[in-house]
Length: 296
Image (cartoon, rainbow, N blue to C red; front, side, top):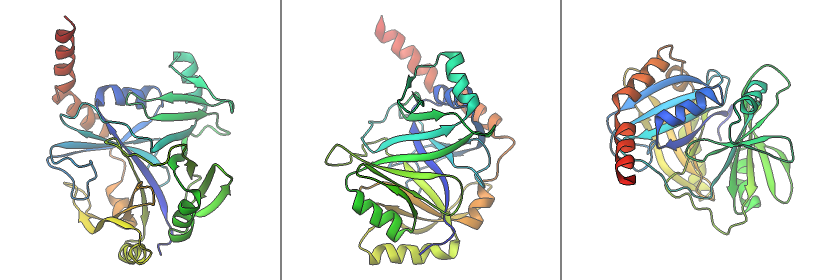
């Protein structure tokens, strides 16, 4: 089984880069870490079941070497995604973001725990709390599951996450790096529906442990969505990945750590590359004109 598992990021499919990037930059105070454009679909379905042009934008509070971050996947021409009941929230600890929500009167509600619940333009939920330091960080990912025991056996047993806490409604596992928790929340529904907007959580481990990981998953009669494969990014490092699915179908990407560290370096040109791509993509403008015309 893999050792030195490092949480990396969670993937959101987004419908408008203009609105979404404004939210992550100006509400969550995240930085653009890197931006990449692709002319055709990913062999490991990184952008979902779409074959056309797409882009990947990594956003967060610092390098993926020591921060959990967000991957924003944009498929050109896709204007909306049906939401399922699989994703719950990402947790942000940040005094500046907490105060920013108050100052800008961003639509929110206060939870009983004193956290702000807010949503990005596609409806993905964030819980924002105060921090004990000046550092901003993503500290937890929460997903819905149907059977806590099956989830515990998979995430804590097969994948060897460290069981941090458990009660009748949820459990939390942590891994070797970062102050970051995966919270698996018992769903009130009988089945998890991932619909079209389904995400993917990514981890790294030593590259040489990817094939043994795949074999162990298969020996435990669990699901391998994409067997060991190498993925190219133009002008950057080639990485090795294995894509899994847990008992509720949540997608999990394991990537070789050494090559991923090369690939995931913060790009000082990321902001300009993203802004250039948004300016060159006229789809937001076209759809706004279409909507105005339909309202007349």
